[in-house]
Image (tube, rainbow over all chains, first blue to last red; front, side):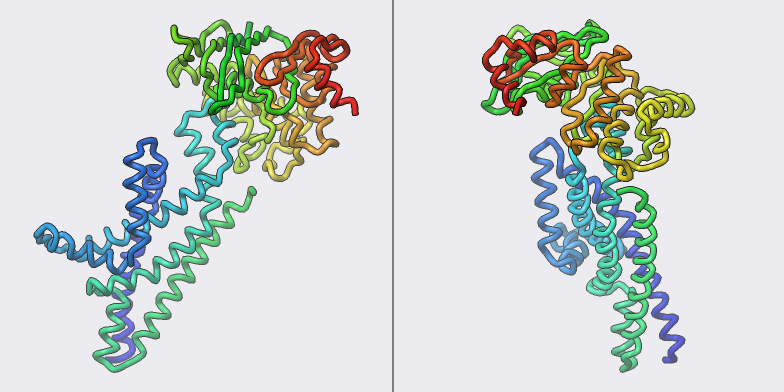
Length: 215
Length: 252
């Protein structure tokens, strides 16, 4: 296999990697906010369920969770779902990352001084206005460094998709390396991940800078 | 009467913070509330502004009832929607300013008039600039709160409250978070508002200010109004032993 064939095969894998990455973010960033808000629900049962969910997501390996999502429906319920590999993968990633994002959001929301809520309340803002206009923009600024961290981790965590034999760049690099007896695929994969994260870092820095206008 | 608070009761856990307090505020009155910390002064303001809910008693603004006691003596409030309408009657200036840090000074003053009162942007900005001028900080309109001194921030907070055109303005220890050299500029603004006959209730530890500016002084201790009246009488000729004792601590 020539270097250029290797490169183009792996590039196709990298596209799949980025697919997992983007879909996970699209799902987990908003879902995390829902989870964070439910965690502060006035219903004890809801709070309890959410806190158990977060504990499980954070307390067990993501690799194990992916396997559970993939094999669970069949072994537990005898369900045979066609084309389940990719959906299971995305659900697994989204469920896991939403839990982490939820905790980051919660930390951010709780760090906003109660005086901000009181000032908004006295001025007559509704609860929704208060959250959307006053609280959320400040939360976003506070949590940005932690979110960046998590997003960078996600780029690398996509490699766990190999457990479900999904043909993203890491699975491919292992396969090609074994079949060609070459170390080159690992090097290429490493460069791909590094470049992806370099871009993530650059973009997130821009976002953080754009919020530097206030303290 | 702009505000009527009758027989207000409030407790936190086992502690009774307000014991059957009544307070009426007429249009144009400036009332100072003084007293030791923990006496219930701030709690009274927080009940008047619905940041705390009362256990019993009655709160009326402009003759309209916001809360009253049922037959068992427990406070019943109007619905949250109706309560929101009451918020346009008053403004509150906090000890910690509580400006919105992500909004420019101008936006701090215009956002609520636009999105709560439904004012046009032009009108809200015109009002805001007028108020900033009055506060002597018109040049800070495009700045952000963190760029201002504490005294300037508190003047912005006063302007923000005034931008809502309230009938009455409450101040919760407006100078307590300020360096001594900055309190003067804030007190001057409040004094100016008093001269314009703005109705105000000020919780304060600034005794000379309370004496000079208010029409009436309330001395609170232990959750009750111990003594009230004309500032000259209360400060120069207090009748109650508790008042004398408190005022003596300021003579040192």
